Structures are given as C-alpha cells and as structure tokens.
Image: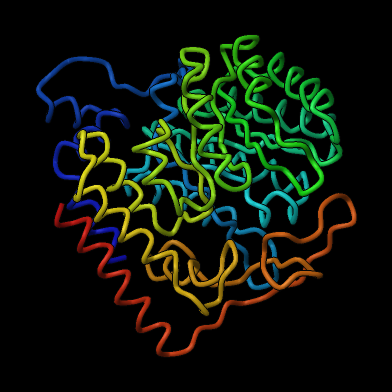
Length: 380
C-alpha cells in the first residue's frame, strides 16, 4: 500500500479537500468555511463530454482461488484507479472479462463498480456487449437500471460490435437500437472479433449525428497505420464527434495525441493507472515536448517487458498485488489459448484457471519498475 500513500501525497491537499466535498458532511463544510450544500445528492449526475476524455483503463477482473469473481476487490480496483487520478475506468471490456464471464456475473460486477464510484469524480464505463444484438441490448438495459440505482455515480457505456454481425448494415442496426435505449455516453469500440466488420468512419459519424446524446465517442483500433488516418478523419467531424480514444494498448498514444487529435486512451493496462494519469496531466497542461515524451517513455517501459508472463493480465497482476489492490494473481484463461486474448468467442467458450508465476529476478525488476513509476509521478 506504499504506492497508495504516495499517490495521496502527490494529489495534495486540494485534491483531498475536493474528495471530502464530494463525500459531503458537516466537517467538510466547516473546514471549507462555507455553507454550500455537499456535492453528493439524490439528483442523478450527468456525464458530459468533458468527463469523457483522458485515460480510461480497463480493469482486470479479480478472482478468488476457486475462480469465482471477487467483487469486493473489483470495487477497490475502481476506487484505486480514481485515487491515481485517471478520469475514467472501464469494466468489463477486454476479452478476459467479456468472454469468460456469465451475464449474471457481469450484472453483479456492474453493481459492485457503480457502488464503489458513488460520489467520486471518475467516470465508470460499463461494457454493453453481446454475442448478438439482443444480448447487447439486454446488457445495456441493465446498465441503465444500475445507473438509476446509483444516481451519484458517473456511468457511461462502451460497446464493441456484437459477435454475430457480419455486415456494416447489421452493425448499424444494432448500434442504432443502442442509441435509442442509452441515456448516457457510449464509446464505440471498432474491433470486436476477427469476423466482425470494422465500422467505417462514415457510419460512426452518421450515428453520432443521429444520437448526439449518446454517440460521438470511439475507441479507434483498426489494424495498422489506417487507425491513425481514421482518427484524423473522426476528429475532423467535430462537433458531432466528441472524443477519439486510442487503443492498441496505448503503445502509440504519444503520436496519436500529438498528431491525430486523440484525446483519450482505452487500454487493458489498469496496473499503470498512476503513470497514465500523469501522462494525461502533462498533456492537459499543454506540454507537447520532452516532458510528455518522458512520461510516455516510462509507460512504454512498464508495458514492454519481453519474455515475462504476458497477455492482457500476466505480470501486470503482480503490480496490482504489490499496490494492495489484488489479493492474488489468479486468472480465468481460455481453454484453447495460451494468453487471455484471442481465445474462444460465442456460447461455446470454456475456461481454465491459471496463476501467474514469476521468477525471483523478474519480481525484483518489477519491484524496481514500480518504484520508478511512483517516484517519477511523485517528482512531477
């Protein structure tokens, strides 16, 4: 938990006071020397385009030793991401969460996450995905019910193409129905599976104009250099388009920030929330040169440990455990794959349990990298 103490120190007294105000209470008002009502109330918060910018890391799903979802730890992970300073957090969206959880588990996780972020500044984007459009809409409807039960939580959605769509027309029909149902911002994820179509820029913009209350946000992760070219075109469609989030694990986010108009990042690497938040703080201050580059270089160092246990989870779980967020390094793993991404899709998916193991020298290096990250953030 030493990292958490450092993060609180980094955030400073102003941030602590802001959190106290958000939580309300007479002691806060006395300290602030004012008589204004606390921020938290029964009135539902409204998620604005301003809330939908910056790094939105996807949380890794925590499990008990028997493979059951650890919902308490999931909620703690969302709070930790907020404490690190990230403006947003996502669950469940990466393959290990979307495809290896039952619908019931997802609904319980939505509830745990929403409860955890009540009254907090962070925006929680919940995954509205399905093996088909019907399932996607059923899950989206549950997200709306969760939001109604937790009116002081900032809740958005993120949606990838339903697994069974094969044409852009089918995708448009599915997302058009989602636009009619959703009452909050929805991030489109352009990649679904290797069989689903990549939505055209024209489709994304058309839907943003048709449903401006919900659409206009996209996680752009088309294959190759074309993603960067698409970002430029999507950003040129403002104000219908609001935020273009980078993907690809963030490995080219510096270029996409400075050259393509990206103002957000969606990545499975929640373990690096402290450095992602620092990178974004520097960008928001107007830095575009060496200081921004140095923050990005630190991030790239952390995510590029070759020949360590990898995938969407892998050695990242060790850092989450070191920070006192996770209790273990247990994962559900695709039965027919060696890493968490790229496994089975659809109703026939099966999983097995695996525990990430590290060699002593790997642990020692990760300990040093974690200290370097926290020292770097603390020395801003």
